[in-house]
Image (cartoon, rainbow, N blue to C red; front, side, top):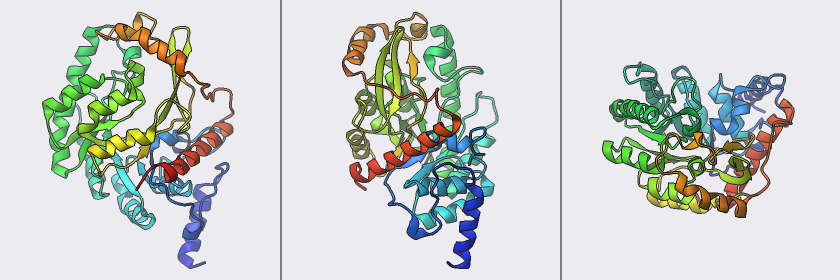
Length: 356
């Protein structure tokens, strides 16, 4: 082993000490086949943030996170990278032949500080990214899920006006660096509200990050979401979804690809037809199912038109329900290992299902 390789191996052993079931490659020849799929940091949130008593986590060193994703077979990452890490990250990304999509936090107020957003976009441009993932921030204390956060349509419209104004002010910053904002459908806007914003601003530097699963919480089918937003697609969060009924509505959960109700290969084909340059980024979050209480009055408080969808949607849930994974009863080490195992399986799926 060369001195350079020995140094990399020693560094890897230090960075990944305490990670269960991690087989970090200590030479290029030991790396697994590279999947066309990459992953968003949120898809490996346990490994990014760490878990008490298991491992420190990788959020403080994006180069370590990049190496970790490649050791699982991943072909790219979608994370934020601070300015100080850009040179090392760019060198390692090029060495591994991986792709990169950025991430940038939008300000929480229209009169807020846009400096951190601009710094994130500038770093993404230096790393060759064509887009940054962005999410409209909920009000303080909100979950980001519309049906949990807003108790009236007036509250919702007030937030929407502010959120849309923030995005409008961010677009010229994105244009300055020629990096598009990929605005995620993040359980906040319905697909038609999202389309209306994109049409109104009408800039090549504002598009959509399409998550086929998120708007299922609004009783919108993944095919509906993809078809409506694909003319503006800049990035994606591929994830297969499972559903099951519960007393107040239905449960919604990310599941291993080809075990749920959504055909990710077909959906990605629709996205790539709209944008041939899009990367197949996944976001299979290993967590307990989300409760979507469509049978409660609180769910409908911020909507004008969801009640009419309930009966048909719950009939679909009853017909297509499946056993959903849960992690609440697992130890931190078991959760950590499960997230890693799920990610390996998704990357392996990409080698067979996604054409480069």
